[in-house]
Length: 261
Image (cartoon, rainbow, N blue to C red; front, side):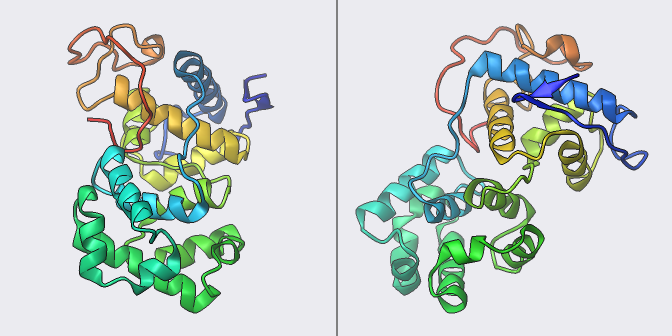
């Protein structure tokens, strides 16, 4: 039996035409093999790098459309100013907040997003993020999606990393890797997520590590122009060798949620 993180993978039915291969048994085996290969290659990623769930929320908003390194600079500025709390962010002058998070880009828009979240949290939950995150998963997802600046990917990121729910994050890196492996060619993100959650054990720690490994692999190899030479997944990948520029040197370094090219 195929296992992931010591737990057996599952089989489940999925709608025709949404994902390939046609058997969930094949999908389960492929996903299990990919996980073990990536973990062996890159090791545990230790993601998400934050000191609190609220910092995860802030980071998930700041990293939109930029690199994690830029988001980190903005977070450091908020910490340095002593304003990385819901009340402080809610009370800041919008221009002052935008200036602090300028390194993250789109700083005026992101300032509005941060203040929308902070003010909602204060008004609805008295600033208690744990109370918000304690909602049932589907209720919490709908509530997050109702807020300005939080789309499906950011909502799922918060469900997994901040709330610890077994929600598999499907971003452009997940879609690109699984499509190249022949598992999700032309599939919608929701269909890919449904398949992954149907065949993988419902373990937040596993989903956390798996997503982090996919992004790390996207940083190092499975970029828009893939670097297939020496790829640990090459023998599994129908796309291996297509438009690849050659060997990769130096695969170490930090994992970033937005560093892939």
